[in-house]
Length: 588
Image (cartoon, rainbow, N blue to C red; front, top):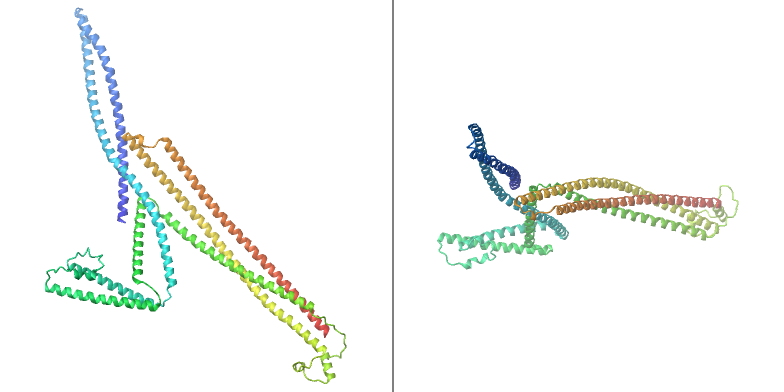
């Protein structure tokens, strides 16, 4: 924050100094022009007064020298005239001297102002060069920010993919993972201790600690001894350190073996050191990228640019991804509904085929010839037949004993079976009807849910359009600010070049007009592209809305068709039931 504040204060001071220098240059230029005008006027006055004085003085002297022989009265008059002219000449000479003195002062002031102007130009030109360098650096930083943003997105995506891969590949139990993590931490701790002791041993034998940080063969450094002059206490300390170092290396090797055995038993070829190195590398890269992003944000804030539109853009991008996920989820639900509707259609086709099959069987079955027989009241034909034959057992027992082989009983049994099967069909049809009604209710509930989601999506689309319009307005404001800043920089650059007299290096009016026309044309093209994009988005949303409405109409028509089919089935089965009941009544 201090760097950002210092950068903002430095930028404000530079702007203040540039403004004061420009104002001072304007004042000096105005004073110089005024002094030059006054000097020219005084010179013109001197040039005009000198011939007049000479014209007046010459005849006076001629008259004086030639009129000595005139009378005394004329002499006195001429003396008065000569005195008057001498006074006028003295006054004019005094005026001329004053004008010459003032001219000298003005020339000195002009020289001083020119000197100050050169000094101001010498101070102003480095600031212009520095401003150019800063503008180029800002452009480079903006490009680097874009590249880093893209790279950060790519790295985050790769990190997410790696995390998903690791989570999908990890099939070991939680206890094994915890034990592996504990062993990994122990290995890291032992490695750090070994590295610290290796640094101490190398410095004790004469190596530099800074130079031995990256040495890999620290465990063999005691072989490079040059027999230093050491005391017994130092030798004891060295022996203790070496003993501790060997113990730690043994523990480290044992931990590595245990970790390898645990990895083999858990069924994975997992390299802990490689994963730790890659994780540390990724963390370092992420921290570096975060610091870089913070630096770039501070640079953009120093330039005076607002970062809210970037955050709004990222929020819109995330919201767009959420909407895409919702659309995909709704497409999956739509596919599921289509599958359910197709299943219902298949069931209806099967029912229709079964009905046709039953009708065909009924048509192909032999006709029943009913004979008008008169029986006593309260007695059925079977009872009369049994009494005539002298049989008193029930019909079920007779049927079990295979005794009912006469024609009326067989007709009765066939009629009973033919009446019983339609009842079963009616029950199955009732079950299917209830299932279809439940499915219709589910479809209606899903339709209501879909309409609610559609309303939510419409609201989300309106909010997104409003946010996009606000972001577009903000972008246009930033572009206008940038164009004005470029124009101000160009004007200040042209003024500096005019002061220096190097107008050939600046842009001409035609080129400036061409640049302005190109900028306006670019703005118009950007606006047209944005309008076309918005129109395309609206067209796509309208097409999606029309498709959903058409789908709703199709579902309603399908539901109506299902209702009509169910009603027709009910009528058919009612007709069959009435037909069989009438046949049974007539037969009985």
